Image 1 (cartoon, rainbow, N blue to C red):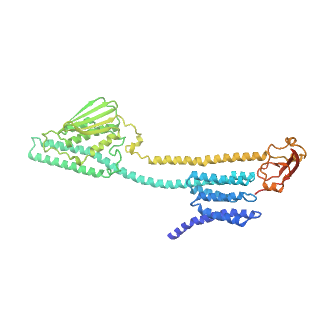
Image 2 (spheres, one colour):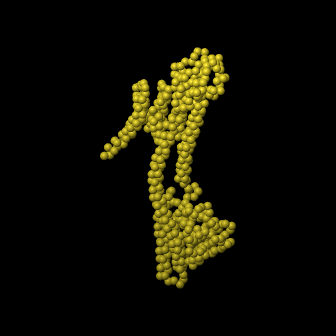
Length: 551
């Protein structure tokens, strides 16, 4: 069954080309049978052979196929007598295929213009009648441009359908990617919250256990129990750090961590406790911490308030872990539209007991400051950390009073600055530019060509109607009268397109100069022609040259 389907698909283009060739050849065969004295090789076999090559050849070279069909139309102008070509239908069909299969709009328009120019050159060389000039200026462009535009429209629709399915596939992949990234962000958020809250609490518990262990009122068993409690808390902190590392493993992979992954959404409420309450809890746990304020704190956004709280909380946690027993000083400075949070701790006292809670090694974590730096940068602030004084440490954050430069709809994970991917927007702009160009081609170019055709038709109509001599006036002309006397009766223009065979069948009298006029104003028919011959400015002969109908 698969082989049958494959074979059918292989032969389908051949069947389509054969059907199109048969339909186009039928028009040529009908015109052949209608001619008075047709030539089988020239009028039938040669055109059908050209079409047999042009129709399948249009799949790879549609421009060459159009040019071949136009050549068949030009041959019709060279026939005796000239005739409107029956292969205009083939020209229109191949122009449509050029629009469907072609890609370069500029080259296609150049080809269509070249076809019209070739036909006009044939008209000029053969000096055909005016009606065939009109045929080239009107019917040939009509067979070229509208079908080509229809083909372009068909191509655009096919491209739109293909692009729609491709877009749907890309969106499905993006949706899966967004779902995966959302899960990773949630895991990271949980890790950050656990680190900021539970890690801080466990550090304080370990600190209080270490302080109680030094109390002189405790027995040896109590001290052993407190030492075991402190060890258990230290183990719990280690296990917590390992768990957080697992939660953040995928998110920290290169190219996957979104900017601001540890930051709450803009609508998150500020921390339940204030900075003063946080410091008070730290003092109850034995941390020598104090707060100093400068300036009136403004009404900050909840995101800024929460960020201030996290800076102080993370600084206290680091001081407890890495410098137990050290004094911590917190300074909040509100000046202009900025708030500076500076947390410094002195080096740990040399008299600190070896039994005091040991700080984890620097290589064992570092997630807290990494998350804090991202949080501060997201709200438009800066974070600086490093040694302070003689063995101390400082954390300094400068925060704006309001988060600016972003729309609320952007969300905390919206890419900012160089992280932003302009690819889809750039593609949309390109699509809009292509649509505008196609609109211009579809309407402006046909409009301009139509205007040229109308002007040409108007000029031709003026030429043919301005040289009409009424039959009654012709009958009243008498030989022997001068051209000056006849001027008031004769038209303002003479007829310039007298067929050569008519002139050959009716030669001018020797020694005369003849003028020609049309007998009526019919524009699309070959009418009788009046001939007036003068000798020495006197009318010596007047004749009626019979016109013939042209098909």
